[in-house]
Image: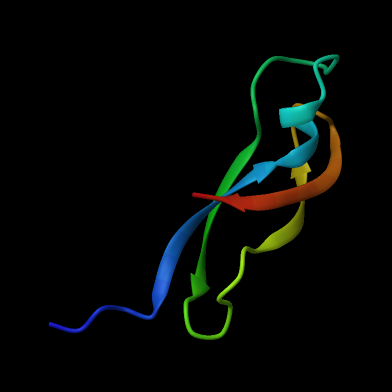
Length: 62
């Protein structure tokens, strides 16, 4: 049985994690897939955070 190359990852907002004075409690998270062979490191994408109400960098979490 072969493993798939694409895996599901979770992206979390970096601003929500470090900022205590934000608009609402919580952390913005997105799920997406990545190719395990082509992207071996952690992924970073700029996504819209509803808690910060702005486009921020979202990093891959474990």
